[in-house]
Image 1 (cartoon, one colour):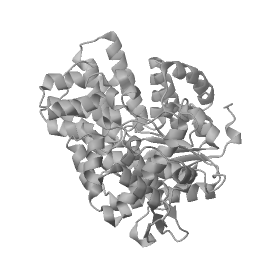
Image 2 (cartoon, rainbow, N blue to C red; image 1 turned 180 degrees about the vertical axis):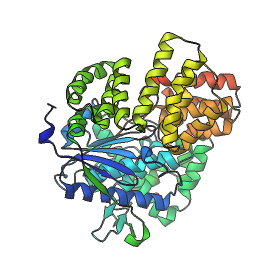
Image 3 (cartoon, rainbow, N blue to C red; image 1 turned 120 degrees about the vertical axis):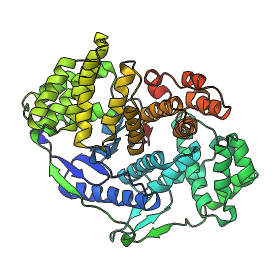
Image 4 (cartoon, rainbow, N blue to C red; image 1 turned 30 degrees about the vertical axis):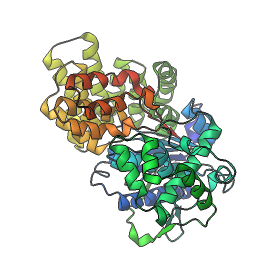
Length: 501
C-alpha cells in the first residue's frame, strides 16, 4: 500500500444504484457496472420502492479489488471469503474481487455482488421476520442471475458454486431451521446450498404451493421456527427426501426479457491522482475501524493527502481518518480545506458537525447555542440534499449526545432517514426506540423484526428478539426501553453488520 498513485488507474462508475471503484480498464468497469445496474433494475421491478433512488448519497459503494486475498485482508477476521457487505446509513459498502472465477464451480464477482445486493434489498423492503435459511436462500437464489448478451436475464439458475455439497453432502433437516449457524466453513457451505435448494423448491414446486406463505405467517405470529416448519411443510423427513429428489431434476428458471427493465446510464470517470492515492485509506475506513486501527491508518492518510490540499475528495477522506483516530482539530482542518474547494460538500459539512458535537460532548457544555451551532452543520448538509439519510440521523443523534429530548422535527427526520436507508442496523435501533417513546409500539415492532431475526446473531444473545417478545406480551414502555438500550456499546455483537460470502 505504498503511495504510488501514478501506478494506479483507479476509475469510478456511477449508476442509479451504485458507485463502483476499481483499478481497472474502462471496458471491464463499464461491463461490470452495467451488469450490476441491470440486476438492480430487476429488483426494482419485483420490489418497487419510490425512495430507493431518492438521493445519490444513499447508493451502494462497491470496491472491486484485485483478488480474494485483498478482499480477505480488508474483511479482517472473516476467513476465506470472496466478498462482503456492510450495511450503513447513507451508503452501504460492498467489497468484491475483480479477478474472474477460476471455473464455473467457483464464486464469481457477479455471484458475490448479486447475493449481497439481494440482502440489501431484503433489508430495505421486508417488514416481517425472515428466518436464516430463507434470508440466505433467497440471496443465493438471486446470486445466480445470468445476464445474457442481449440484456435479458435468467433468474433461478442452479447454484453451481454449491454443486458438490448439494449433490454429495447432507445435513439434518432440523439444522436448516436453526436460528444461528455452525461456525465451521464446511457446515456453512452445506447450509447455503440447502437453503438455496429449499427456497428454489418452494418457489417452483407446485405441489407445495402456499406452504411458504403459511410458514412465514406462523413465524411472524410468534410460532417457534421448527413448529412453524412442521405445520406448514408437514413431515420434515419427507421434506428432506423431496429436496434430495428436486435437486436432481432439471432446474427451472424464469427468463426476463431486456425490454422488461429500464436501466439508467453508466457514467465513468478517471479518479484524480489524489483520489487514487487515497483509495487504500478510503477502503479501510469505509470497512469500519477500531480506534487502534484508526490510529494506524491516520499516519498513512496524512502522508498520502499531503500533496493534495486542494482536492476536496482527498481532504474528506483525511477528515474521516482523523476523526476516527480522535483528532478533532485535524479533522476539522481537513473538512475546512474541502469546503474551501466545494462549499456544498455534504461529507465535509457532516464532519464539521461531527467534530463540533464531539467537542461539545467532551466539554460537557449545557450551552444551547453551542449545541445549536454544532447541529447547524447537519442542517446545512440537509439543505444541500434533503433526501440524504445521514445528515438526518446525525441531527437526531446530536440530541441524544447532548442528553436532550429530541425535537419533533428531529424525530420526523429520523423516521425519514429510516425510509431512505433502512439497511443500517443502528438507524433501525434509534428509530425503534423513538417509536416506543412516541407510543407507536406496533411501528417499533415492525422496525425491529429484521434485527430480531438477524441470521448472523444467535437467538439466545439477541436482545431485539427479547424486545419483540416483550411487545407481544404488552410489557410497559419503560421495560421495553431498558431491553433495547445499549445500541452503541454492543454494536456488531448484537447486530450482524457484515455479511460475508
